[in-house]
Image (cartoon, rainbow, N blue to C red; front, side, top):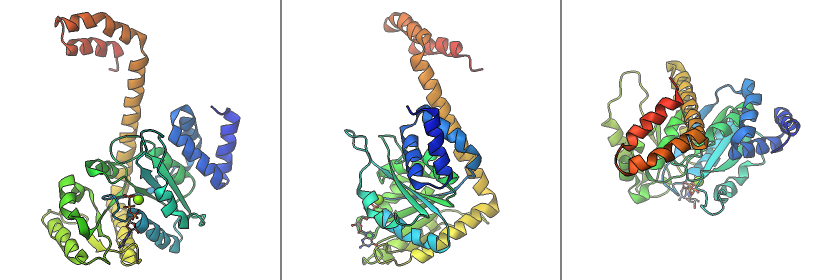
Length: 321
Ligand SMILES: Nc1nc2c(ncn2[C@@H]2O[C@H](COP(=O)(O)OP(=O)(O)OP(=O)(O)O)[C@@H](O)[C@H]2O)c(=O)[nH]1
Ligand SMILES: [Mg+2]
């Protein structure tokens, strides 16, 4: 644990725009605990509610390549970017894989872009459990947009929709992705669908299939209509159209009041999960509860009371209401 003065110094450097300090604060967020909480308290006045875009889709669909391309379109309009890449962590090292960091290296010379990999530490949802905190750091550092690339693993990437304002689902023509996407529920969460690797044959056909399945969904008057865009991250084709659609979605969110509503929802779920974590820790560390459970286990064991009766007894001790 650092001294309070040391932590304050890092925050001051961060406020002065020092990128090394930004990196250190992101590491502090990754480690969590009281230091992370202290940092959030200190930067709170600078947190404005940054616009978040989630990118999800199967492994190898070209998410990182496309994001790197897209980043330059944001920079052309002088928008500053934070990029979070959630890497599946090794169960042995707990560290993030280096692949994405290497792939995005060409971005790191631009001070208007900050790329960070976060290990997902086995949490469900294809998203790291410190994503919100990392977003706060980018927000307070004056970035305009944050991209979040998730781990593409089956159902679990769906959680990205709960953490972002706009979801881009990236698919490729080669592997029956469309059908997989429908099965995994990706069709429900996407605001914009990208058929990437348009340099492959069948891309047009695959895009039309997705379009056809989107048409079957009912869209109310005035609601956003999800669309399909053909891109090649490799050849930088269609990326301009993706940027245009993203701008249109952002405007739609602002005009409809959804931008504010989503921010409220993101914060609400954050408060809830922090509260659940806190209660979980209190329950685990409570001697009274542990003693009571142990004292009553004999009764549970001999079916004199059910596990639920015991939980009711404990629940009444916790006295939240
Ligand atoms: N032909 C073709 N290949 C591409 C395109 N975009 C990316 N690739 C290649 O596809 C591979 C995967 O690209 P990434 O950008 O790492 O894909 P990803 O979805 O981020 O992968 P994970 O993060 O590992 O799930 C790389 O070998 C890329 O060079 C494209 O538009 N066309
Ligand atoms: Mg990637």
